[in-house]
Image (tube, rainbow, N blue to C red):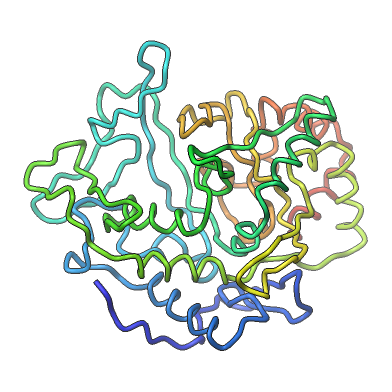
Length: 378
């Protein structure tokens, strides 16, 4: 399933929304590549953009069940590589006290579209847990991917040493690597993330994920071992995400700076860590660079705010700290998109986020206003 990947770098941009990167003074637009790439790397980014926005067909391997015909279908706001208000459904149940993803019934992810002749998936009647998960922006994730595993392990140790009840936990994969991506930090790299999305969101099997999904587990008429694509498509998608420029701060005023002090004073920075640094990277543009995601990318027990789904060794109440960079262009917040304002999202915090939430509630009007101005500048 290979196509010509000839595109220009005139990437679609929405309005005058501007992002900038911590590694260059030159402003970039949302959807542009990170500054400092070589001509060869820019060509790879262009190929990746083409793969990301390409509308897949059954001839390409689409289906038999899927959630979208292209990555850009769910990741387009405010530009290619962004998020959207679209959500997917996860489900499961508890069997003998243990989470059951109900694999035999197609769990735990619903694919809500299908090719002709195949059934659309529905949540099984026996499922007792259902949740929505929203599509998140991908801007700047190459920087996150380039952070050494040891950095996240050190962060977890430092948070534990504080002894304030907000310590995060590293999600260790079965092969010993650190999970960084996904709502449960269940994915260790953008390369794996690309292969996972190819199969689970579009039904395109690949060497990383070679087995077809079947509608609610019914594999009648499906060659479950048919490989739809080689590794090139996965690599193109990973290249696009790796080289996608990060968002950074909007306008910074005196009130915004005062708001960041409030953010720190009430303990939001316990989990939403402002500063990280990359390590070694194939790309010089990503090598040993500071950046500001406002996340520790660790798992935290969020109590009733958790979605009930277990993935890897992440429990049903644990959620990876959502990065706050680019918050100003996100319209629906929290894992399920239930919050439409920042206030609502903060007030929904439970578990390890409850103390900071309570301190937010206790703020006077001026302090709360400045805090929100700071958050809206990210």
